[in-house]
Length: 101
Image (cartoon, rainbow, N blue to C red):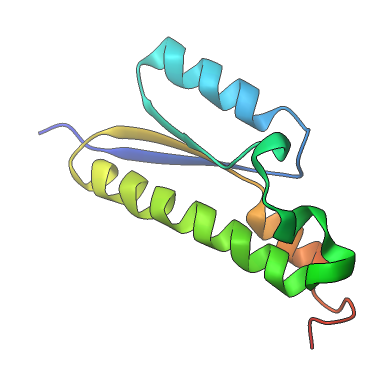
């Protein structure tokens, strides 16, 4: 029986991980899940001075969690999956900022 595989690329926005992971997925014929690009970000993310860091991070979380569940389900079904993420890196940056207490 073939075994599924779940590969994750983690890093800051604009470092090329989405581009690389999309191209790698296309080349290998793997399933690829990526987080929204900056032009798709909601006001909660773009207006941190109004909405706060916590609201922005929760928006990112709600955008990324469904992809994680879908990727895990496919990997459990012996599919090959790539997931590109910056949420964890961004969370690390914002912990300790004003409004995150």
